[in-house]
Length: 222
Length: 396
Image (cartoon, rainbow over all chains, first blue to last red; front, side, top):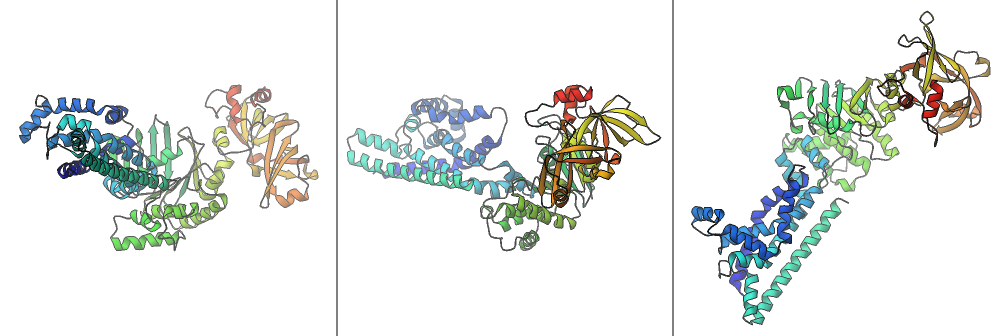
């Protein structure tokens, strides 16, 4: 077991889930309730990482984050670090490729809250912020939790994008999925097997959690 | 402290409506589905922003775009009971009601919530969640929540539509009791005329977003402003006739209806030969005995239907051979039994002169009287029988 790679993966997955939480909630609410023009286009854009081959997404992120790119140069000027082949770049890439996994379940959860419930909160005197905290979030939390579980598990297992953007720098960008690949390439079957089994178990728990939370949400509105 | 509003918009639902409701008064907004009743209520609550108009409650202006005023729902202090109650499903009945008085100190909040739950006869249900309550109980929690807000206006959006008939009657009685103690304006949206008549001090009829008439329920039935209002308030005795004679001296306008001459109270607006709609409330149709046949406006009719319910019978009787010309009237069920008023029986009916209301024939459509347009103020056709050919025959 490559503990360093595992720790890095857990760090990346936690950071992704934490950063995505407010961003995805905001996006999901907007997508669930807005009828503004451009909503469908934004929704399609968010879903794009689901259908793009990871290497294609990774390639474009590599271009977008590279030292020649505006974003890469800006980041270098601000932090003195590069986005590609660094943990920061990996986190940025992770946020992008996890966006559909975070937004979709949350969007479904918020869309399931009847408009009248939110309106009842407003006429009861609750501000928009109070309505969010006391009504919307408690009702949508199974969807929010499911989204976080999905993102966490997906980040641990992501390979293509991580390899393209981060490479395989131990302690910086070498995640557990890359470590498994390295061990398999080096014919170190027992290490690859134990790490794979760990990821398999974790993914199963995450999917189980998502499914149970989904059922709970469905039951609430029956 | 009253509520007055003028609401206008052209889309998504065209609205041009005026509402006035005094403190302590219950105003029912009635009209068919899609007439804009609920949208109007949402405009009052600040949940929908119309294009123009105003909403004024007491001294406070809630909406006036010319002055840049548009208070959010949180600042309007309305109690709103939604059609499907919109209770917060994750909170207990007590927490639902407490949430509506968030501006009150915490210890006072629970006391006040319990008070309103008790007023709604919901003692002992504090800790039940909405899915553990019956439809009627949910409605009462919604009403308690609306009142716990200490509203300046109470808005009820078809609050009885989602409960069964027995529960509805109980809830209606409770609301009748409760409203006696409320000094605020209450606006009730309903498509149930019986409900409106039972509860409302006045009712406003809406059609395609326009307010057609505001009057007490009795006045609305006795003196509808137009044939359209009569139709929308489900008046069964709405027909077309032709003015034959006008006499100011005898206070009489004589109309011809299917060959019968009927005397109505003098109405100067019509000229002889002109087609008119006429309406008579069920109470204006009186069953007469053989020796009373000489009475004014008395004619024979063939009973086609008798519906009895709790001591009352609603009888429909056709006049002569005209199947579409069916008069509806109400009598005690025991009278109906005693006098053998059953389908097939012939009865003599008097149409009381003062109860006959003459209305412009084209008012229903707001257009010059054409046969098709006048169609809307003809009685409903019998199943499978179009009304238009008869309308033509009658108006010729």
